[in-house]
Length: 122
Image (tube, rainbow, N blue to C red; front, side, top):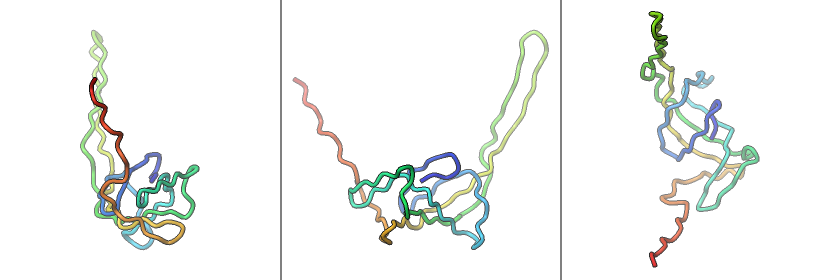
């Protein structure tokens, strides 16, 4: 799914941290309509660029501040030193449900991709 300019790989029940989201009208529930890739029972659906009708439903857990990022500028031999701090505003959300166009829910599967067989040394 895409939120802002970033992409996230999510499953039902995952908790992820995003850039701060504007509060929706119903309080704490979000709907993300930009689903880029969907894996359901081992079947992969790839969007062009998004999957029509697919959406991710999530619940806001909390808004918080991230760790402080320190930015410093320094020029040698001219006594130029500047410092500045920044704390990003973040939202912690939990993925509640992933819906498709056909109305089916995507279930959490243990392993959706096959791995290549190991090559033996000769």
